[in-house]
Image (cartoon, rainbow, N blue to C red; front, side, top):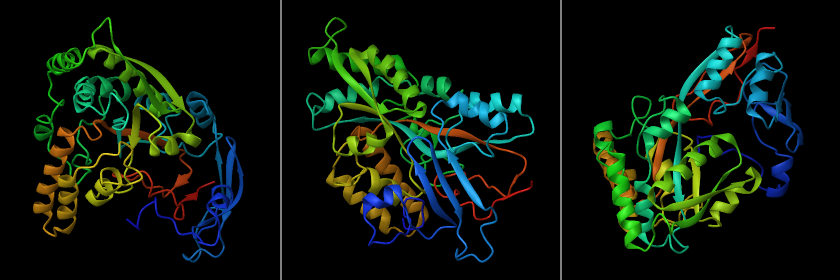
Length: 363
């Protein structure tokens, strides 16, 4: 867990507040300037531990709120690269049609779209309500609309072949709510809701919180439409990125559409971070002692096949408990100009190939 993009080294004598605006670290580039919602500027670190690197002199990260505007700026040659996770399948195709010379790759991201439900707030402290919400999901529709069918339907761990621990598709299909008969799932969900006093004329009214960027907003709109099928009338509640993570961490939401990206494809990273009792990233406050015990057991297991069997058992338990229903295992595209050299895409994470110390420009 130390060897991932979530674990940078920085001086402990510098306050957290200062680190947010004037970070100090040990990386290949040094901080120059941060302008909120405008830009982040870095320059080459001459004291970087890899002698002679990095090869480029500076990096200028520009913030452009509108996704289509970002694409147009890249096509016009204003930028050398797009941002990781930013391009949908459709936008990648758009760039390729306008700028055929660009290098574009669609990658698995080890980033899931998932449903989070606040277990501490009525009526969502009722497990029947949580089950009904999970049974409303049509995962194929999410995949077709958002990713043109290129994403994968999986459980918590990243599916094969890029992932080493994910359940095979035939096993995933047996998990509660994952079956192909979506209408049967929704019929069961409506029975649950009607047994609790809800109906088409008397729906459960909720707010669906999500981060105010397209990666979150777009699937949240689909979620709201699907919840209508099970007597849930939902309203979109978009939250600014600067407060999103703190808001969900303290439980200041009812239902949420969330994205979760473990830094590396490893069960410890995923389970301890997102499902262990008391973890700050366990946004639903889910806590099951039996699951906790099994997380520890798989962590100690040195035989890969035996560990994988334990991981799959954990996947089944998390699905039954509606801990944090996974909707899709996502893919996203990234494009870079032909003069950008030696950039290598990662296939099982989004945080660990952004040092740029090996990258150079053929200009």
